Image (cartoon, rainbow, N blue to C red):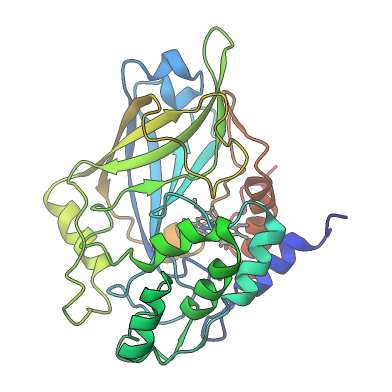
Length: 337
Ligand code: HEM
């Protein structure tokens, strides 16, 4: 039977012992930027949602580090987030939340709960070179060495879980090798789940969205000592000189693709449509209100875009509401009416 408290349990288990309950339990540190989205000339042929038809739609974007630790470690290898809120003309909003991992760790909320429990940050000492060689000989992922100052980590638990559960292997392997971007706007971000878009003829298509940076993807050098805090200032300095841009790509699924499991990739040759360009040209001064307090939600959709039946997407809607309430976020997009 489905656990009625699973949304709450998920938020609880994501809270790290070195986190801060007044902040987000994951994606704790970030920076927001504002700008606008312009649809491509063909976007409206695929989706009737307003931001794919209107000339321009204002947006606010929050970039973040995936970690829930209350210490900023920009230079450490970590998944990054990009939460985009489109402000529609009737005063409502719609969100598209993405991250640098192309696939998620688990197909269901229950499986993710098990994963998150096993990957709870634990004391971290890394592995001896001999143990690493042994792991490689067994075709298992060796642990990386801890960063200076890194005492606890989810890595060992995540690898242990992936050794037992094939569905987690792609996500864990990708997360283990993801590194750090030189800039929040030099990374590609994936919304991971499948959404259903409706076109003007009422044809429905099962699609996945991702943001591609116009400046290209570039990571820091993994052999250099990581810098703790540079991503926010880098974005401020960059945008003071010129706007940052992303293309929104939409991949169209075909019969046989997994529509309800974001841990499974689709074949690489699926049709991709360029849906529009995002331009970021300002950094809100009040980052407390316009970034830290903001509450995004993957369930905040609009006419023309629906959630697929992916159970992880559905539980996220509830978990993000709970998290926003617990950390006193303002406003939770579902508590306004
Ligand atoms: C069951 C699965 C998941 C759970 C329980 C979960 C939970 C959470 C929670 C509790 C927050 C903080 C929300 C807040 O306080 O406002 C959060 C933030 C975030 N999550 Fe997830 N998450 C899940 C899956 C994912 C997936 C698949 C993605 C990839 C698109 C993702 C990307 C993000 C991002 C980018 C943020 C930061 C949003 C912001 O800037 O406010 N999460 N997640």
